Every structure is written in structure tokens, then in C-alpha cells.
Image (cartoon, rainbow, N blue to C red):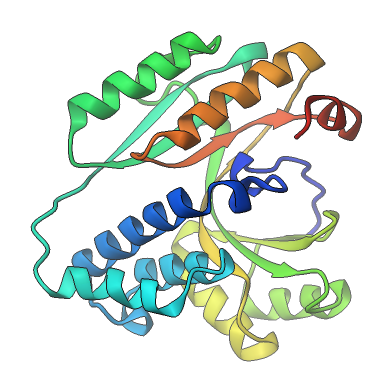
Length: 249
């Protein structure tokens, strides 16, 4: 159970959550409502809803907002969202996976393809890049919440596949996708509630980025993130700290 992956989801860059808090809350609310509609409106009985609520909590979304999103599903909200995944390539040959929730497939398709084409990328068909990723469960704990050794022991006992404590802010625990919520619950019983628990596209190999391509890539991902229908963007980019500082990431 060792690993030292350097990739980071663009959504987790410093300052991104604060800068786009309102848009992020809207997306989190949408995911909570969809999850509650698809199963029981009780997070303890609905793994997807539990993950959505945990993500909302980790983003400091107020409890009232979370409850309103659940109540919206229970109240028979007539909005119906479709899950669509886009796959493509960005600058420097980076592989990208874009997950969306939309009530208008044509609008989302046009917007996503336009954003890619205007920022040095292109969209492919299903399976274009997912073969280069593993779909896994990702559980995170803040570094200051628990020591690496204690967490490693707990993760081993809970049935996790891998633990990465090489990051500056979080421990990352990886699980089989189907075992995510079982492992998360076991870890919660052992060491407390995690910062987050979700399904995740983990790259098998990383693409090292040069400064020019990295700057264009961030423009592409920021534009995708600004689209209301886009929920999450994953990529296999590896950017050095020096380049991150130069481009303001």
C-alpha cells in the first residue's frame, strides 16, 4: 500500500473554491438533489448521497443549503438531469475526463466542444481516454487531523488498496470503486469522519507539462469549470511547483 502520485484535480487548486464559491455550491446542490432522487433521501441509506453531502461539507457549504437540496428531491422537483461524460485531449497531449449533469444535452454538448476547441483541445468519443485511468474510490483526510502511520494502519484494517500521504494538505486513500462506501464507513468508525469520499478517475501515467502548455491547459480547465453543467474535470497532467508558481496555479 504505497504510492506517491502527484496529480491534483483542478478543482482543488488554492483559491479556486473561494473564488467560485457560489457556482460550486450550485453544482454541489445539483449533485445532492440528483443523488437523493436516485435513492433514499437519507445519506446513511444512500452511498451516492452520502458522498455528495461529504463533498458539500468539505467545501464549507452551509447545512441549510444541503438540507434544501435534499428537500428539493423529496418535494418532487420536476427538473431532470442527465449524466454525460466527455473525453478528450488538452494542450500537451493531456487526457481529460469531464463529468456533467445537464437538463439540456444539446446545450452542454455545444458548450463543452466549444471550450475544448477554443483552448487547444479536442473532444473524442467514448473510451478515448478512460482506458488510461482507473475508476477508483478516493477518501481524504486533512494532514492535521491524523498522522500518516495511524491512518495507514486504519486504512489497511478497513480494506483500502493504497494510501498516499506525500501531499502537503491531505492524506489520500484509494479503494476499489465498489468498496468506497464500505471502506469509508470502516475508516470513520476507526479514526473519524473523512474530509471527503467520492469516486475518482485516477491516471495510470502522468504527462509532464511545460510552462506554455500548462498555462493553456489551466485556461481550458477553468473555462470548463465555469460552465454550469460541468461537475468535475479530471486529467493526467503533472506540473512542477516552479511552473505552477509562474502561471499562478
